[in-house]
Image (tube, rainbow, N blue to C red; front, side, top):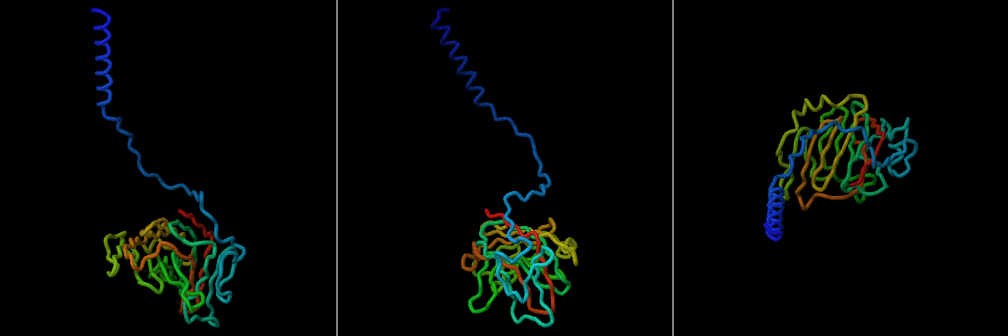
Length: 248
């Protein structure tokens, strides 16, 4: 066999080999499974210093700092005619995660408002999405819209809101009473909010309490203020600590 023929044969064999390799499927990756999240707050910004109300604005009749906590209290002498908020002035909530611990009295009623606005002519009032909290845990964990569409999702519900329609239940997170059992009474609870685009997830003590997908193009909001509430009703006390936010 002359050199030209030999080279041609070798080249053909090499091309055939390369073609065969190219036709082989990629290796199958090893299976992996979710793991428990580490207690990692990397990237989170502390928005309450535990010592002062710096960065927050509210009615000093109702809000103070005590034992490292942001405290809202209504006494028999200071009963409210409308809900009153203390508002974080450090920026707007858009897409974000928020972690905070709270403790509330038995007759207390409060909530964490986000993507909200102040109500003109009503000092310290807000309108917008709220992660609800109450001492009797009738509403804790739900998505309530203060001065808006009201009940967006009750505890245990996954809902979708479409333009011109009421919130519709599209799935379940479990029985509302069973989820209530994960909420501590007269003790500290850990709230974790995950808000991305039109989706809002409320998590309490590691358990998802409600999910809303807001496709209502006329009424939804993608940014707004953050604030926490003392509510009209009997005397009450709400405490918040370790307030931290992760913008996205």
